[in-house]
Length: 375
Image (cartoon, rainbow, N blue to C red; front, side, top):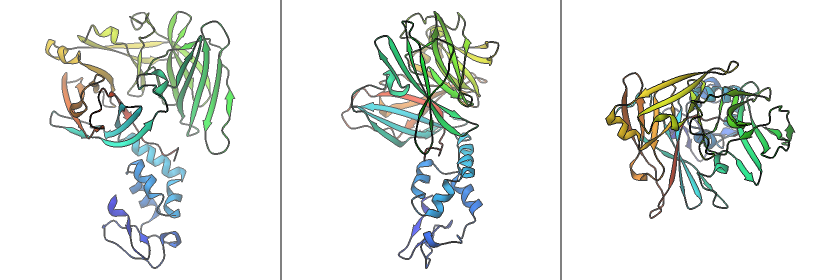
């Protein structure tokens, strides 16, 4: 889109040809733009969010388009059709985020070019593998505080759920904060269940307006459901097979999006890489799960032992990535195509860190989409 912003000493107009066009008046005063509003909306809905942030500074006219509800809705709709990877690298109290498009039908000759997305500097070392970093969880003696972010699809707004739970029987507290303009206020919400959230990464996800996270209800492992719109709680039972090996508090279930349904992976079910077992929620009201088992050949088994499960694409391909501390200069993602039972490795280029830095923790997220709601 660089060819769309051309400046001159007299003003600025938008062109599709890439040639500079002069105007007697600045864009701020230009009341009749050369490109119709509906066409501008369609064009800008296809560019990255970082470009939108840059273009909105060009003029009040463009800023007014980008703030319109119809544009933000269209941008999110278009973003959902082009999901992306998000790569995280940690070094020296700094978290580097990179983004790359998620290919629809990759092959062994494919490669991804990751571009810098954002850099976060921590005031104290909390580590990317520390539960407080992404999950927003904190443990203080017998009290656990957990914070989750969810999206209200009806109200089209983000909400933050904050809870405190105790292991000694003290009452839990549940609060909700709606992220919107104006004064931000926490509101108390009611929950009749006394559960304790699991302190681990990958134990929560928001799908279609419902926030799911793993918790302990008594001695049982359950999936808590929080409807972001109605702000009501519920829970879904797991089963003994799904809970295999979870007696240790350091082990937990991985929650992911399986074609719009809640999916669960427990690596303890995988028999050290001989297979992959995925559970999919079919009926939340009746606590009904389906079990999907993928058995690998002895040759593929050797590779699977050295990579980790990341999630499932919208097409149903299973995605793996290297384990932490894999060399940055040879980072890759692996797609397992269920129908053909074949693995495809795709190299990721563009991940850069400071020379001499070592032991960068890495994490790969799939299905990342951009939303202008916060802009």
